[in-house]
Each structure stands twice: as C-alpha cells, then as structure tokens.
Amino acid sequence: MDEAEALCDEVLTWLAASYRSWLFYCERDVVWTVQQQFITTIGARHLPYHVSNDYPMLPGNRRSLSADLALVGTTGVVAAIEFKYEPSHRRDDILPGKFPVVAWPDVVRDTERLPQFFAAHPSLYVAYAIFIDEGGSFCHRPPPPHSAWRHWQHGQHVLLTRIHRHV
Image 1 (tube, rainbow, N blue to C red):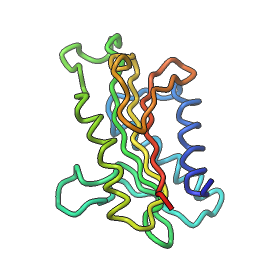
Image 2 (cartoon, one colour):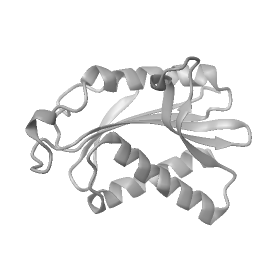
Image 3 (cartoon, one colour):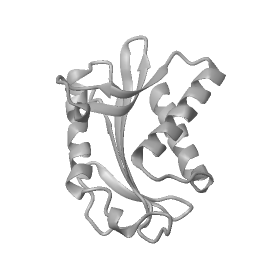
Image 4 (tube, rainbow, N blue to C red):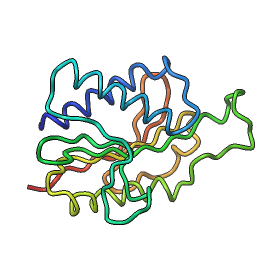
C-alpha cells in the first residue's frame, strides 16, 4: 500500500474511532477536524506532505471542482478526499427544518468525479468520497459503483468510495 494511502486510512480510522469525541454540525466541521489530524500526524512524523483544503482538482473556477482535502507531496497531489455529512435527524440541537442537509444526487456526484481527478492529476494515487450519514437516513440506498456502506463503531453509517490509479 502506498504511504499516502496508508496515511489517509490511518486518519480515517482515527475519525471513526474518535467520532463521539466531536460534535459536528456541518460538513466543514468534519473537514476541519480531519485536516487538523492530518497536520498533526504529518508534523509528528516529518512526512513529505502537506494537506490543503478546497484543492482545485478540475479546470474551472467553481468550488465544486475542488477536493475538500488533498494530500500534496513533492510530485503533486497524491490523495484527494471528498466529504458529505448528514447529521442525525433525531438530534435536538438542530432544527428539524434543516433536514435533509444533503441531497443524494450530490453524494453520487462526488463518487462520479473521482475518476476525473485521476485524469487531471498524474501524481494522484488514491481518491476517496466519504459520506457520513450520522443517523442512517440514507443507508437504505444502494451504493454507487466502487462504494460500500460501512458501519462505524459508534453507529454511524458511512458510504466509502475509494479508487486507486490503475497502473
């Protein structure tokens, strides 16, 4: 397994294990938390990467053409991660009118963009689309290609898409 992928998997495993330590309200909260863990891990190990948010992956000016997080090495971006987050609809600290936060077509669109990232970035080794469905509101839907529903230890439903560069 590539070092960048191993680092991504480690940070995502950390997120799954520590999920109940955090209180997320929106996708950006998840992205910030994961970005901080990448920064901490990279710094502690003196790894040859930096993590960037809203990294432009595809040509154009729209933010939708960026990855939420990119792991960048000396050769360019080596890993990209897209996030979506749907808080539990049973939470009493979020107004019911705010739900749903995520539209299912947007989740699918994130998974469909991953192959385009590889075409635009020859250095890219692995790309992820991660949808945290905190309360299981979407987990009855069939996963898109290259995706699978996972259940984290604290009961969250997570749609994980991971695509590698074909060598």
